[in-house]
Image 1 (cartoon, rainbow, N blue to C red):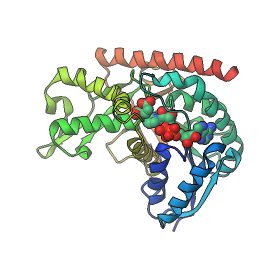
Image 2 (cartoon, helix red, strand yellow):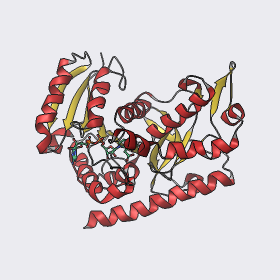
Image 3 (cartoon, rainbow, N blue to C red):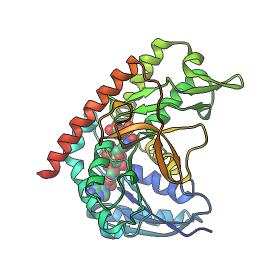
Length: 332
Ligand SMILES: NC(=O)C1=CN([C@@H]2O[C@H](COP(=O)(O)OP(=O)(O)OC[C@H]3O[C@@H](n4cnc5c(N)ncnc54)[C@H](O)[C@@H]3O)[C@@H](O)[C@H]2O)C=CC1
Ligand SMILES: O=C(O)CCC(=O)C(=O)O
């Protein structure tokens, strides 16, 4: 068996945490041959609940879980960790946009960036889930200057999973037969779920989704708004934000980082823009990436038509505004 991987989950006493802790412990992310030591962080008033979560993980008798550390001290939670799921943050309520959370949540990510900088391994891979995820990831990386900024990413995998599922449902095929859907930009209602480069496995071959569905009005209209507004639809139905699906997407994202992407497949995640596709350099923009040896590369040179360009610019503008607001909130 490999050496244990130390994995921190923040907000571990919350909704997403409740599913995520189990999934990470089950071996689906780091591999069945890789033991994990779970570092669970939440705030002091939640320690009773967190201890209950910790008891339950132990009671799951998961062969991969070597130890569980439950704490309200970031210095303990981030000590020598290899991977972090930063979930702990306030979720939005009905009627709010995710950016309405910025002022409250961004300071958490400033403080956690500083703590990661001091206590985590320099090779730590940090996935930011707490909203607004792209901008929180940017702030977290900014305050952790000793950790390479490529090690930080923001979650748009839930949007990718939602988009794939919509298309699979429309075609009546398994979700695994839809590939290379792209989420561009922000994990917000301005995101652009793009099917121009996606394929579906139909009648024994991979065909472009546009050719398989043959309904441009749907693909450029209802499909996009359904994915953009899916988070709000779940809140309206459940009176709570997505949790099980968010935990699954977080596992998919970290598994892609840890285990790489299969040949010919790409996945979407928020990463630092290098200006690719004329996006603003330095914001955490969601791009299609491939991953090898735990390093991501933006998929280059995909053709972008006028329809896509306009949508990619709208979400870029929002990310620049969020970045500016976040930087001033951190100076207050
Ligand atoms: N990027 C994405 O696709 C998604 C992001 N989210 C976001 O994830 C976040 C968490 O959502 P839920 O688990 O539903 O919320 P929740 O309210 O059920 O749990 C959040 C937990 O974080 C804890 N927490 C708050 N401040 C903390 C801090 N400084 N350090 C450690 N823990 C802290 C809380 O005590 C609570 O236990 C929200 O911001 C939500 O909007 C949710 C779904 C999808
Ligand atoms: O929509 C929200 O604000 C909470 C959960 C989320 O980000 C999502 O479901 O996509």
